[in-house]
Length: 433
Image 1 (cartoon, rainbow, N blue to C red):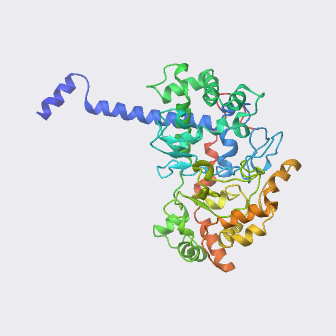
Image 2: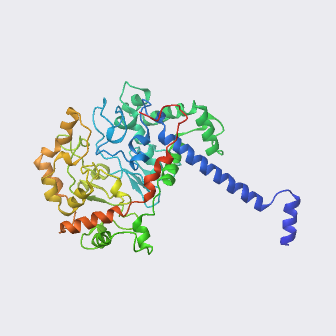
Image 3: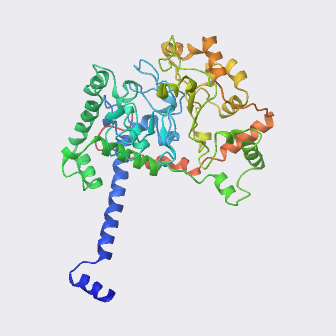
């Protein structure tokens, strides 16, 4: 019977094996096409209102997928990384630009420092976001959903009202219109139309079929694949290579799991519990509009409305932590050892904190915003009282050991991310600032 069936398939000119090969080839081809499309979109300033900033501006592979400064200088800034200046920006982006390593896994059920994009089956899209019920269906997960929101931020990518039509739409609360304006730009670029057709052959036959969900999903695919880093020296040590890390780092690893109590929140393969905690981070920058004077940032409470979540922020993964500073939800610390010491002695570090510990390209008016909250004793007391950090006492040598251990969590492939940067993008806009 098996021979007869095979013979009939052969006579018909088609076989299961052929179908399976063709389907697999199509999936592989479309997978590569989606990755490449996502790569172009990640680096292309066409997705910003004024066509002057891209995802990669604040998540630069050459800067370990961050921007190397405490608080981002978004729309209106000039330059990249530590050389970026404030240009004509009205305010710094109030929270640190986080690294995007390993965010594509299903473990990340929430994203952003306050978790405002999170899996929630009560919503039609399956994801709760600031868009509520209006988030479009078909997004592949939190990383795809997260990619949509910098496009709607006036200080990040949209620009201000009166500068461009996208910024106007955002200012008027017409977020879907803002997305559609950006999609219209892509539809008018022949290379993008061709790339979308190759990546979504079952969905896109011509330009009008391109949509914002495809943009978000391809950005997520690119980031998931390009920035997956799970082979650090500590991984190799765990697999049996006893010589690859120093004795100090080995001691630091034991302290991390034991006396220092780091593992309480930084557990598992990615060294995070994916939860939200208050750790008394010094309040720098313009804040998020909370409190009487507006320079406070209530963190997770902004999402849940629960006062018990005040000053809580999502536990970051410690993968590549040694190269992804400045550290803290607002980048308050520009030195890795300082942020480790803060976790051990939060009261001392908070009360003695000075803005010089951050890295903030200077401009007189912005500098005053940076330190406003630091002068508020009542605010500092409230932040300290909310802290959940366990009581720990480590010697200077033990702290050094922990820092050395953290350096061993860096996958060496992060030093070779320049290969990801394209030479040009379909819009023709220069990658240089």
